[in-house]
Length: 201
Image (cartoon, rainbow, N blue to C red; front, side, top):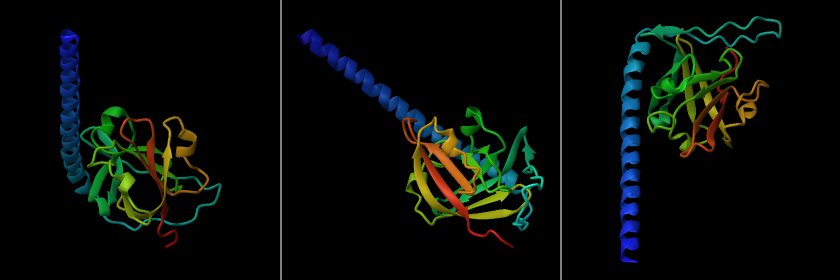
């Protein structure tokens, strides 16, 4: 029995050390992500010029222009997402993959031209990790690389499963902007739905 007890203690210590190591890695990884995003933000903001957004209503047969992108150090960006209440200001990559998500938020689907833009990011504290604490009515700003700034207001929060892509992507005009990130564990996604604060010039 004594040997069994010692073995259980050793196993417990191993699990504890492993958990502490994983926590430490996550903290360091989050800090690295924050610093990388700050560096990327400086590069992209220095190349942007302020302009007024185009809120012209397009007819069904009008061609929707592609969102402009800007390439910096081999990566393309569509703009900058800002959540002032969380002190979040981050560049947005023009595509998404897991390597890019470690650096900054990524484009997922839609467009600010068609009012169905969807952006995703890791749940790092410096990225979208605090979305779950964002109150309804919070201001969010997206500035395109061409200089136009779109002002959105958080209107709803949802919890979606990873396989609910059909609900994440909205093309029926319900939500103008969607931001999402995984909750800890990755089994569900915190999803913010936003509407344009201004729809006409």
